[in-house]
Image 1 (cartoon, rainbow, N blue to C red):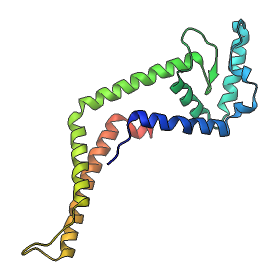
Image 2: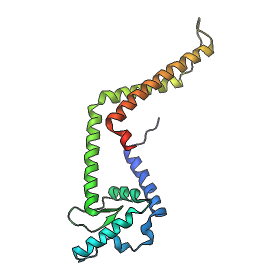
Image 3: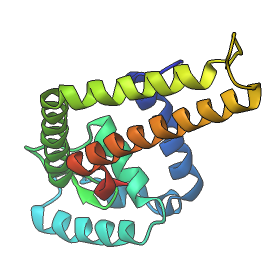
Image 4: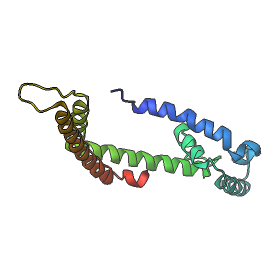
Length: 180
């Protein structure tokens, strides 16, 4: 079974986000200068312009994709507020990225702490896969082929149920239901 690495998943996600933005972003028809602070622009002027840009972004159908891409690209600066992307100022993008970093570290720590749970989940998936691929065969004194198939199906059903219970518990504990 082929598993995608997190690096492969990140690389595949970026073009999807960019395509969504290219196809549906409201800002493609706006003045790009609205979203960036000009060199030497007074803070009061930039604050008003930034507020207008943020309002503009909040009506955009692909705002969340734009924000995600901005976070992936490392946009924003914690020393200089000079841009708006995805409806967030540069400062807000930095804060969101730091919050996500903390969340991801906590999730990894929780996963490492629950190593036994992960082992159970993996073992159940392996058993289920192995049983599903096994061909029931008759041997001396064994029941008819249809009965063997019925017994195998029961075993597969039990393994799938066990896997679902462990997976649901893990998702509930790690907060996946909230994110999904």
